[in-house]
Image (cartoon, helix red, strand yellow):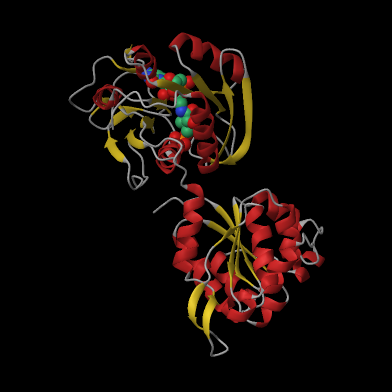
Length: 402
Ligand code: PMT
C-alpha cells in the first residue's frame, strides 16, 4: 500500500504501558512513506524515551518541556501541519480530556487546535474501558467524527483478560490508510500523463526538460486512492511505478500520444507531462560530429496530446497543466481556451522549491470564468486537492465501463 506515502502524521503518545508499541507504529508508518512527527504527554515519557521516537522519525519530539523552550506555538504549527493525528495509546484519562475539550498540555491543545482527522487507539484496563464514563466519552468523541481504532481483547498488563489492549500497529496503520482511501472516483477510468518526453537528436543526444514525473505520479496515486482505475503514461523518470496503477513507460511524444490513444475512452484525462512542443525534424542515425562554430537544428511541431484528447468522442473531462514563468493565470487561461480544456492547473516554474523536480508545488486552478489558488504544499497533498476539485466538477456517472 502507498496510500500513506507523503502523508503528514502526528503520533500522540499518552501514559500507558502500551506506549512501547508506539515505537513500532511510528516505524511502520515511516516505512509506508509517511512523514511522522511525535508529540508526547509527560506521563508517557515514563514509559518510553523521547530519544527513541526522535531516532525513528528523525525529528525532535514535541513535549510540554520542548514547548516551553519555543515560541509556545508548537501545538498550532503541528496542528496545521498534520494530515491526520493518531493518539496511540490513548488512555482513559486522555479520552476524557479530549471529550471535554481540555487544552491543559501540548497534546490535548494540539488535538483541540487541529482541523485534521483524529484517530484514537485506546489502551486501558478492561473495567476502565467498560465503565459508563469511558463509554460516554467515546460516544461524545465518535459523535464529533473522531475515529476509534481498536481496542483489542486479550490478556492485559494487569494480568486480567478482556477488551482494552491497544490494537496492533499494523491494524492502526490500516485504519489510517482507510481514512485517505475515498471511493469518490469508484468505477471511473482516469488516464494521466507524467514526466518529460525525450526527442532524439542523434543516438546520444536528445531534446528534453526538467520534469521529474513527481506531480503526475502523485496524481495517479491520489486518483487511485479515490477509487479510480488509473492508467499512468510516463516519459523517462527515476520514480517507481505506483502500486495498483496501469503503468505505460514511453520515451517520445509520438509514443506518449499512441499510449494515450490506446487508453481511451476515459472518464477523466489529466495531462501533467511536460511534453516537448517540438522535435528534431531529422534525428540522425549516427552521432553528429563537431564541425562549424554554429549549427542549426531544424525542429518540427509535435502533436498536442491534451488538445487532441479534448476533441475525442466520447470526450473525457479534460485537465491540462500550464507551466509558466510569468503571467501565470492569463497564459493558463489562453491555453485552456486554445486546447479546449475543462480545467487547467497553472504552476509557476523557474522558482526554487516548487515546479520542476521539486517535492512541493503551488498552483492556481483556472477555468473560463474563475480561478482558485492552492498555496504551497507537497505534491502528494496538491494532487489530492486537485483530484477533489476534479471530482466536484467531472460528471459523476462513468462514461466508460471498467
Ligand atoms: O514532473 P515534475 O518535476 O513533478 O514537475 C511538474 C510539472 C511542472 C512538469 C507539472 O506540474 C506541469 O506543469 N506539467 C505540464 C508542463 C507543460 O508542458 O506545460 P505546457 O504549458 O507546455 O503545456 C500545457 C499542457 O499541454 C500540459 O497539460 C501538457 O501536458 C500539454 N501538452 C503540451 C504540449 C504537447 N505537445 N502536448 C501536450 O499534451
